[in-house]
Image (cartoon, rainbow, N blue to C red; front, top):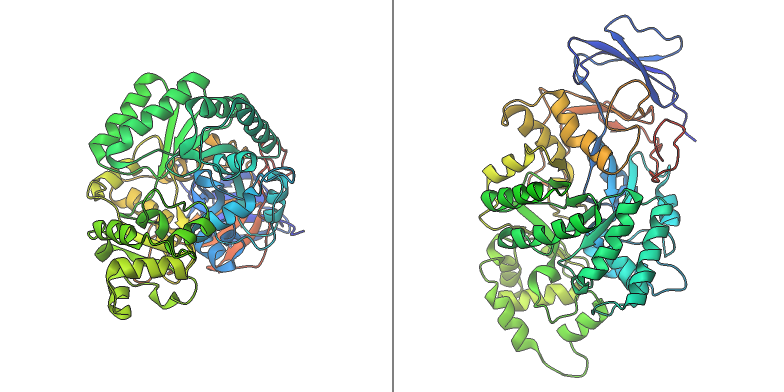
Length: 530
C-alpha cells in the first residue's frame, strides 16, 4: 500500500480566499491552511506552489474508462487535466452486475460497447462489488460507478427487446438494490439504445424509486437530443416528479433555445435537474449506431453480422446500401476513430477517403468497415448545426452544469476530448465566460459532482477533506489535443496528489496507484467514501 507522507504546498491560491496560503496534507487529508510562508511541519515535503491554484481534484462525471482507466497513458491524460475521479457505468451499458444465475450481461456489454468501453482485462462477470475491486488501488485515479439499466435488463431478460413483465421488473429492482449496496453511486439509463428503449414507463418508475430510496441520482442518456430534447426531458421530469429521484442528463447539447426552454420547464416543474456537457462541436460513437438502420440488431454482434454478411445467402445488401446512401451528408465530415482488424489503416480517414482507397462506393466501404471490425469501429462526427460555440459556452456557464468529457480512449484517431476537455473548460471559463475564479472552477468541475454522487470528503480543500489536490496554473492552462493530433497532453497541471500521495510530479506519473473505488456509503479512512 502506498503511504501518504506529510506535504506542505507553499505559496498557493485557495478557492474563495484572498491572498497566498500554505496548504498542509497529512494522513491522506487536508490538515489546514496558514498564510504563505508560515506553515511548518517537521518531516514534511515542501512543494513550491509559486502562486498556482490549489484545487480539489476534478470529477469527470461522464467517461468511458472501464478498461482505459488501467492504462498509464490514459491515467496521464486525466491527471494532466486535473481529473482525479472518473464516473463509469454510463449510458446504461457496462460490466456489472452479471450474477452467475442470470444471463451473461457482462459478455453482452463487452461485445455491444467494445468500441466505447474497451475490454476489461480481468473482469469476466459478477457483482458491482467485484468490479469495483478490480480498480481499487490499481490506478492513480479514483473510480465511481453507476449501476447500468441495460445491464440489469440483460441479466434478467437476456437480449430480448420487449417490455418486461412485472416479475422481471421486480428482479431488476432487486439487482439494482444489491448494486447500490455494493457501492454504486447512481443508476444510469441509455434510453436511446436497445434494449432500454423497450422499457415501459412502469419499469423505469420502479427502478427510479429504488434509486430515490437510496438517495442516488438517475443519470440518463435521454431518448433523444437536438429537436427531440423537449420530449426527452419531459419523460425524465415525469420520472423525477413521480419518484423524487434526482435527475442528471448526460452529454447535453443542441440548439441553445431548445435546450434552455426544456431546462427551464424542468425547473418550473420542481424537478432536481443537472447535466454534464463537453466543449466540442463533434461527437464520437460506435459506427454501427450511427450507420445502421434500426432493424439491424446492433446490440447482438453475432446476429448483426449475420444480417450484414448472411451465411445462408439471404441478401439484404440492397436495403442496407440504400440506407447508407441516405446518410451521404454525414460521411465527408466523419472520421474513423478506431477500426480494429484488417482495416485498421482506415483510422483517421473519412469513409469517403476509405472508399477511394478501396475503389468502392462509400456505402460499400462502410459495410466493409463494420464487418471487418466486427462492429467494433468508432467514428468522430460533426454534430448538427444547432450545437454552436454559443450553445457550448452557455451550457458550460449554466449553474446546473457538471464537467463531463464523454471520453472514449480507443483507436489511433480518437476524439480529443479525452485529452483536453477539462483543460478547455477551465480555459474557456477563465477567459471567455466573464472570468471564472478558482471557486467557479471548483463548483463546475469538482464540487457539484461530488455532491450529486455522494463523494463525501471530496470537492473541496477545507480542513479534513480527502487530499485529492491539484496545482493548476491559471495562466498556462489549456488543451493542446486536436482532431488531427488527439493524444496531445493538456498544459497547466504538473503536480497532483490523490489521497495525499503524489501521482503526478513535474508533469509525469510517479507510478503510485492510490486511487480508490469509491463505494457509496463505505467509510474511507482518509475522510470520505471509498
